[in-house]
Length: 319
Image (tube, rainbow, N blue to C red; front, side, top):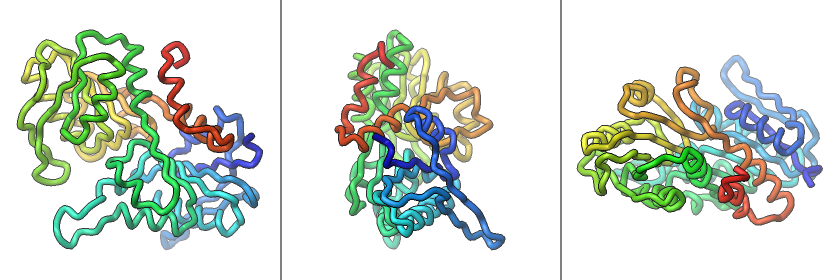
């Protein structure tokens, strides 16, 4: 079924791509990524891609612009080499937070990046937990947004936590947190906060009963960790016994390490959509997207609906 498919790894997610290839039972396509002395980048396939369905796996994480340009350059190389289909698996989609004009004269960079990817030759985008669902409408190609929420919920279901309350760190993440709460059959709480400026949040109130509870904060991403850190402090001030934090995308930039490891948060969980910072190894639990990505590629090649990639996480004995 995969004889007409090739999987390529660029610079950002080499281990994840290797894990996906192992699960598919295929060899990774050979790629040359080189940099000229002036900083220019060239990316090219070393295998024939003629009439092949090509899959590029690369998150646009730090260094964001360099990783993005690797995708653009490599996609152009595949297009010019007569690839049949060019599919981009971008577990973490950078620039997703620049999806609107928050004040006059600001760019909408998410739309710009979407246009660049399509112009470069990308035919299909597969991503996980986009920051806002409307990002799908920025693309003029097919977009499949998968979610790691069933994976996270299955992890905690196996932990058999007691006296749990699932918490959304803001109003925008309520639906995400509710999906975990439904799978764990627990109550839901919400941290009411405001953002006076980017990467700064102020907690106004906690909606819901968290006293003497083990709280589980669910978020799509942790960047500087200001939001989840402030939320964890507020929950403990309201009597929470413990606070765990789970996210899909662990960016962990700037002061994130100091905030996450100061003792306020009892456990941190993320996926491998972004390679974990080396200084966070052993301090953060990481669960892999490789099984879901491998199954997604297999289903695309076999013409099978992608909705069934979640079935394994609905069966605790299989997971």
